[in-house]
Length: 64
Image 1 (cartoon, rainbow, N blue to C red):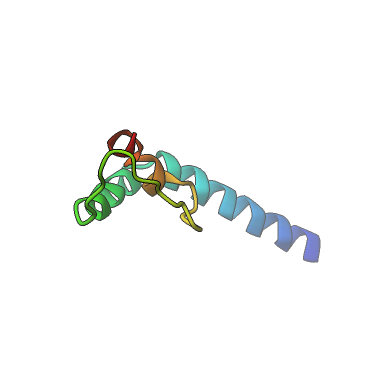
Image 2: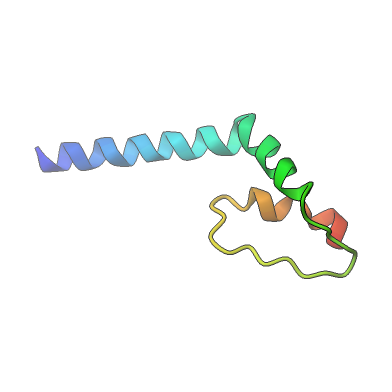
């Protein structure tokens, strides 16, 4: 019974991760965050616990 519960939890979070990475909300949220950050060419961007890295990947072209 405990193993069934554990598998349900794993399946739930696997679905959430796939939905979040491929969905529409995360790119919009990343763009909103970037509107408040002045990124200049040559800057280093630290991705610290941002999950899929979407927020760190989005500004990469500006920092390059």
